[in-house]
Image 1 (cartoon, rainbow, N blue to C red):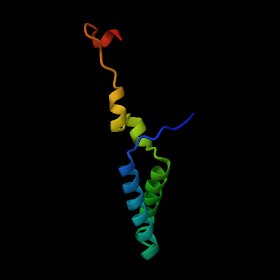
Image 2: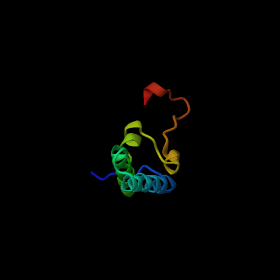
Image 3: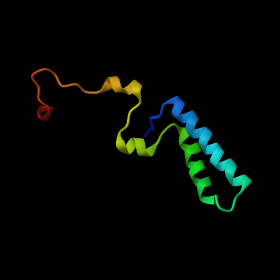
Image 4: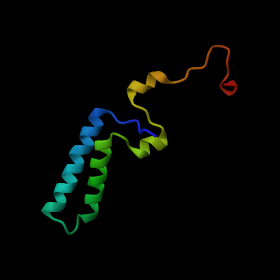
Amino acid sequence: MRIRPNMLPVERWLRLYFGAILVAIYFMNPFPYKEWTFSGLLLIATAAIGYCPVYGFLRRRKKADAASVIVPVEGQSEGTR
């Protein structure tokens, strides 16, 4: 099974940037921010893969995929598909 990326490139770069900041904070002052480092690693991992499991669960699509939305044919109701 192949995982299709479901994030825009801008969002991937933002996740990488903020994830790196959270990891860098750990190296500056590790004691109270240890848990935040795991959040930063999660952001970096999802940015590297390009797939966010939460978006997959919510079935969020990229704007490029919005054109593939199924539109009912005239005379066909929602329940008869």
